[in-house]
Amino acid sequence: MNRHIMSITRDQAVCRFFCEDYSKENAAKLSKRIEELGTFDVCYENDSNRPVHVHLSVIRNDPTTFKRYLSECSIVDLEDKVGAKAELVTEREVVMFLNEVYKTTDPKNEALYSMQEIETKKVYESVISKAEFMSKKSEIGFASWCSKRKVNFISAPHTRKRHRGLNLRLRTLYVMKHEFRGNTVVIELIYRYNSIINSFFLL
Image 1 (cartoon, rainbow, N blue to C red):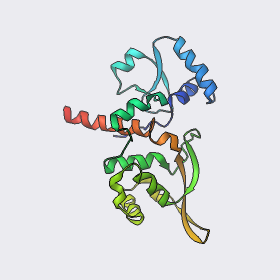
Image 2 (cartoon, one colour; image 1 turned 90 degrees about the horizontal axis):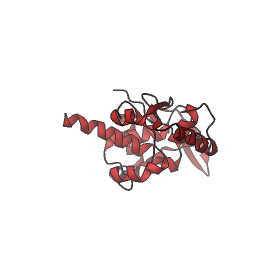
Image 3 (tube, rainbow, N blue to C red; image 1 turned 60 degrees about the vertical axis):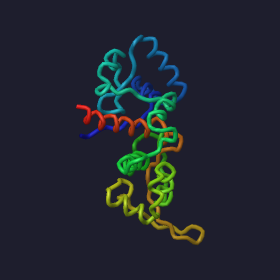
């Protein structure tokens, strides 16, 4: 099944719904307009970049079809569900985390991502801070692990640069900003995925 991963926050979705540029001021102003409409909210079906306006009763009745956006206010609730530190406990979750945090193509979302030249070492360090079981691997072992599992970033071409007497191998990637990695986007992604998988076993 091909799932579209949420890549924008609720504030961004509200601005996009009203065809306005994103800013905190616009988001606050337009959120009030949503509230004035009564029991409606923005949500999305297959593409989070295309918000729709749906009655709350419809959203609650069919949350699989009409998916709600997350704001930073949702962080605490989500972290309670997946662990206070948002730890990754399976290899599948690590792959999902890497593919969402390190993108090879421009996600067109400057609020969440910035283009960076980055070493595999930095990617590795970001993973072991969230997945203790991955710390048993060396940096080379991690790169091999990513290659075998066809993690997206590993296919990006690398360039060699010399810095302070060291030869570095760098990839140009679109990297999710740190403040978003442990909360609204990645946690929601993993929690939703696990909920879907678990529902299959309950059928």
